[in-house]
Amino acid sequence: MLGSQVLAFPLAARPHQIIDIYLADPLRVGVDGGQLETAPETVVVGPQGSRRIHIYASGQVHIFNILLQPAALHRLVGIDMTSLINEGVTACDVLGSSAQRLNDAVRSAHDFASRIAAAESWFGMMLERCPADDGVGEASRSLLGSRGNLRIDRLAEKSGLSPRQFQRRFTSQVGLSPKLYARTVRFDHALAAHRSQPAIPWTRIIHDAGYYDQAHFVRECHALVGLPPSQFIGDWDNIFFLHG
Image (cartoon, rainbow, N blue to C red):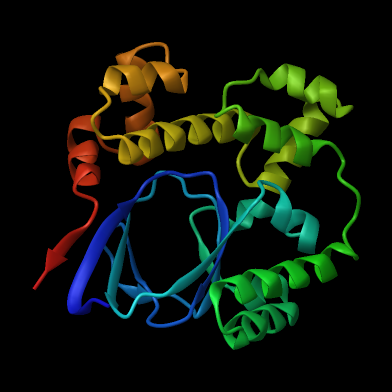
């Protein structure tokens, strides 16, 4: 419970597809220094690129967060995921009338375990109508599991698609091109490693994440966040701060 206090934090480039259901007060979002907008009570969030996004939380924060596999939304509803890059969209605009069923089922559940069961039941119903995986889903999951450190040409070959088909279908189903997705996964892993274990030196985190050297990481920070590490990491080290 935050009450009148405001928690503010930057949102870095990240590869994830997310469904958020706000069970209490929704977050507010500011993009590129623009006017704050209140998130819908159930929102689908696509992969995030280099836009300057800040999240603001106040009141009572209670969010049921569903983290999806890389190609899940495309498989569920056939959406071209490039339309969701850097976007948070009202769930019904993506999922149609089934979004209300998910929203109602989760909200009527009386505890966390019941909400998980309700969401799993909804996904089971949706998957009954889904097409078979064409190889892109497995490739994207492999990239995620490897922290972005797999060769794209080998993934394309394994998928059974031509390189051009693989590039086109991966981008449509995941939202990012295979190479950019791998870079974003690697960057997200490095930031998550720092957040979970801040005492570990950055040089070790960068090496473990698969960067060639510090200069490589610096270039990626500029490309994916639009800031040098010295500025962005300083904000990120203090990711939660209180405003009066």
